[in-house]
Length: 433
Picture (cartoon, rainbow, N blue to C red):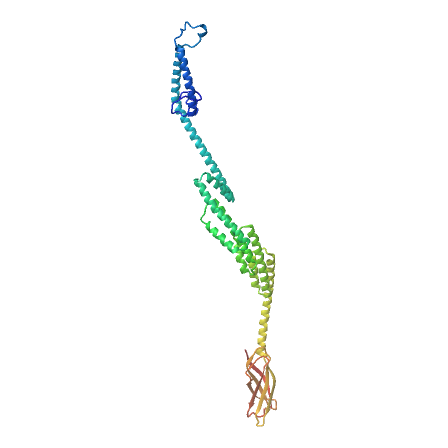
């Protein structure tokens, strides 16, 4: 075979020309070979013609002396055969080298293509992961799915896809939580976000860490909304303080505002309660209510001012109370003395002698004290007509027990008492209840 481009002789197994490197096409070779066959045939004819001994070189006319002679043709054919042998030797050495170069080129190109494709995939994967971490899961999913379409067996892309689908589900759940919150179905929203938070309890890595952060933020929003609803119906410190403690563990701007609202409401209730107890002169309980409010806001001016007033009124009341007690003790002593000394007043006392000659003594008394008295005894002297004391006696009043203001009587009959003229009550004794 002959190369269609350079005319170099080829071996039957050659796919590329060892001389010019052109790819060998059988159609071109066949066409070219036909041409060369015709040329060879013409050469043979010419050669035959030129080799016929019609004339000698010496007998040639001058016009034909420059024409190639048969001898020259033999020499040229020998040179061509030598050139062919030389080219054929060179091709033996060039073919494996060129084949090796071609194989290396294919390997290098394939490796470079694969390396570029891997680099591009990793670059897009990093971009998708960055988008996912920033919260743009939809765009991240689109990039990962596109790359998986090109490299379906790429394991790290499959892992990212699984993470992103889980993240997408969580984002959908948070969207549902938002809807429930807007519909004021706060208990359902809190239950849903709490279950979502539990599902992430064992997850790790920056992607799930960000997701968990968003879930906690959403749970805080729902919790604050619940507290805000509940605090409207709470009227006592005991009801509001637990709500305050719930909000206290949440560190957001919204929680800080709600804490201020709760503090104001707690302080107002404490202020009102303290005033109620102050009006009842229950100073200690009033101060306790003030202190409850100050635990949540130590700078509340109303509570601090009222606390000062309560303390002043308490001190004044205690001083007055002390005086009242002292006065009460003095009055009690005075009253006791009065009851012991002046509780009985003799309203009247009489004496007369009946037809039998008996001397009858009678009279009436009154309890002018402040306490009941009992066992009242009246002492008296009996005088004769000369004004001399001839006897001294005593008798008990009846009824035995007299309340303050009650009256009682006493009476006694003396037998065989001669020359008795009159009586004189000398004293009285009694017991105070």
